Amino acid sequence: TQEAPRGILVRYLRIKYVDLEQSENLESHRTNGFRNTKSLVVRRGAPFKVSVQLEGRPFNPKINTLRVKIMLGTFLSIFWNAYIDPEEWNPLKPSIYIYSPASASVGSYRFQLCVLTQDGKKSSAYGNFILLCNPWCSEDTVYIPFEDQREEYIQSDFGLLFMGSETNIVGRPWSFDQYESGVLEACLNLLQVSPHDDDRGVLKGNWTGDFKKGVSPSMWTGSGDILRKWNQSGNSPVKYGQCWVFAAVMCTVMRVLGIPCRVITNFNSAHDTDGNLVIEEYYSATGQKLNLTKDSIWNFHVWVECWMTRRDLESGMDGWQVLDPTPQQRSGGVYRCGPAPVKAIKNKRVDLFYDVPFVYASVNADIHTIILGQGQVLGFSKDTERVGSLICTKAVGFPRLQKITGDYKYIKSMTIKLEFCSLICPTSTLSSRTGSSQGVLVFLTLDKSPIVGEPVSFSVKIMNKQNVAKMLKIHLNAQAKEYNHSPSDTFWENHGVLQLIPLAQYEDVVGDNLINLAVVVEDTASQERVLSSEEFNITSPQLIIQVLYKNSQYFLLKKHSEQTALVTFINPYSHPVSGVLTVAGAGLLQGKVQFR
Image (cartoon, rainbow, N blue to C red):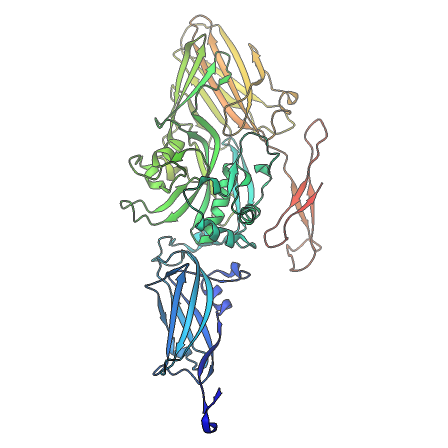
């Protein structure tokens, strides 16, 4: 209000403040988890409400104008809409609905609201909001049509990462932390980092076993610490990660940005360096695996799938897309892989872009096994079944494994071939590896899943395929290996007699390693050699967690009340062990609590 000549009051129209209607918008846009973020968080392709508190005279749409300007960085956003709901009309506090296109860029936006009067007076107010993808909007390229999948692949902040080996799978809990403090800001910052600068990635890989300058990959329990540390360090890669850490952090980033995402484990994952879709493995005459090729088979490898429409490819390529954030092989000069359509991989469309041939080889490459001795090839076999033998992810809504092998490859009938192959028992996770020649069949079988503190028990069965007596020599060899490397030196061997591997032989080499066990059977008359091998992990002792309830009849935890949990660890080794117990809980604890 301003005093005019002769005491006449002239009432101007001004914006007093802007109400972002936080509670209503977060609820309607399903972004309640970001309630503690400084800016309003909404999803594209859906309207959000902004109310303008005016002072002075009421707003008259016949003579006054309300203008909205949306800015992303220095760019003015066009093709956005704004409207007023007549049923909610309040001339002193009009509500405006701002409607973004379903293709609008994800990012942090600024907006300007202007009220203009008939005589040219202008009053302005400013605000900020963050725009994410919208898998609930059918026009958005990331639309996924099932609510339980949206709940799992966007909103769930807990997951299981499957590791180990096909015969002995370990489910590792992981906290994606997408609603934790600082994580959204880190993900938005990641969008600003040059995609062609490999040195500014979130994680630095390390497979050497020496983690003194950082954190061992096995010590991470969630994505939040990693993303915050990267953001606070000025985008210096966090030390250290391996494939499951790379994948889990990428899953967090995708879910934060609103893109449906899940973590995938491929057991017996081929790393084909020369693009011939074949992995060569070399063994000595006594069963020691030799490091003579850059190709390798990882006992497991972890990547992610994101869900999207592929308008850039031919029809039929929509749905799950493989993205592999682990820096293995350069693609177009940069460490990147995907998005490769899963449907293209299943249909062997190796003519398509986005690293389809590389991912296809990861799940479908043939294995050629060569036995060498004195510079000569003593035996050869081919395995068309072992690579990609099990591909899995966490089940929707349940903490258990879901097999998705059939999404990537046609399931072949499981018949015994006179070649190197894998036979999966339908009632057991144990497997048998078979070696074959013209003279004999050799089966190497684990009798049960190996457990730390117990001997490793296995069986070798030999079948004579000819009606001729044979004199055979048997060579057994065990080597420790990391999940993505060739084995190290032999730590146990035996020639001529089968026996158990005693605990004392392996307890110093196991750790997070696996064991490559091989048997070579030699026909002394024909000099023919047949190899069968098995790579397996030894189950580590598990922590047993029991929440202690005051009333044992009910599983009820109250907010803001103290709870007690009993954590039990049994040492299976023959010597004392020490370590640190780390407790973390998304939304429950600020940071981590450690007990030595």
